[in-house]
Amino acid sequence: MLLAKRIKALRDERGWTLDVTSEHTGLSRSALSKIERQQMSPTYNALNKLAQGFGIGMMQLMEGRVPEKSQDVKLTRSNEGSMHSTSLYLLRFLDAGLHANSPLIVTEFTIEATDISQFEQWDRHDDENFVYVLEGTALFHREGGDEPLKIGKGDSICFDARIGHAFTSPTGKPARALSVTIRM
Image 1 (cartoon, one colour):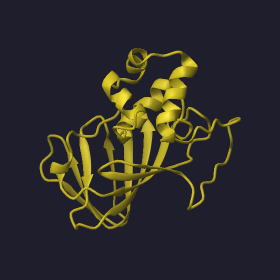
Image 2 (cartoon, rainbow, N blue to C red):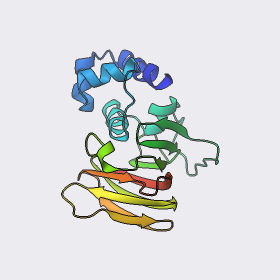
Image 3 (tube, rainbow, N blue to C red):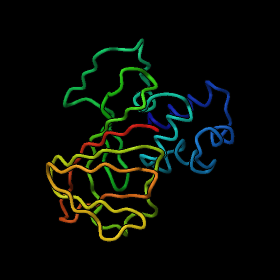
Image 4 (cartoon, one colour):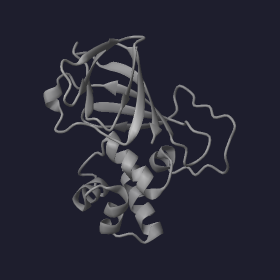
């Protein structure tokens, strides 16, 4: 609910209509309207597009916090970070990047999807991603790829996120991973 209000407030601050916001974010007018009315939970890709479109950092989008100035050290405690749930992942955004518009996004995520058929579309965003598995087993699927890559605790993968991709947990138990994303 807070995210929907924050997005509406950001639009209002800028005097943007849904159409103008759509031009800046690359999200459809319909999707923006549904997100604001809490009829749709934005994906990671949509959150990223919103932050970039508004010219703010992910934490500012998620929590509304505006950093007072650039810092030389940031600390996120184990019980901190903005939580966001989609139908396929549970995301916890960690406070990363030393300035408001840092290209660095760090997310701890829980992979809840158990089969690739649960995805309506591939996830893709204009970033480079590094993912490190913290717990469990995951399958990394990529558009046009052969068999998915199996990755387990302690394994990592780096990939161009412009290529459609998805993660599933084949064991039926959620897997946890850490994602480090660099906006390109």
